Image (cartoon, rainbow, N blue to C red):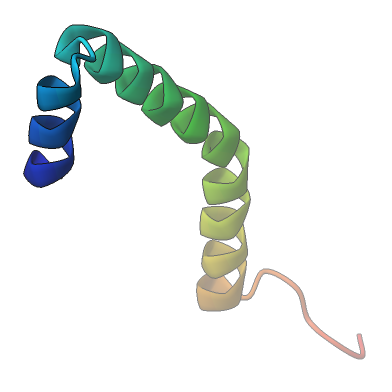
Length: 56
């Protein structure tokens, strides 16, 4: 990652703009995974605590 930033600096790309773009992408991915991680945690809790009985 540091090498990529150095190459961009040599070409003339502003590093601050690239860092802001990277932070925005990270925020978007985090927001997109928020619901999925919550659903995953709920599924794990259901498997661990087994709140349902089958056949009754």
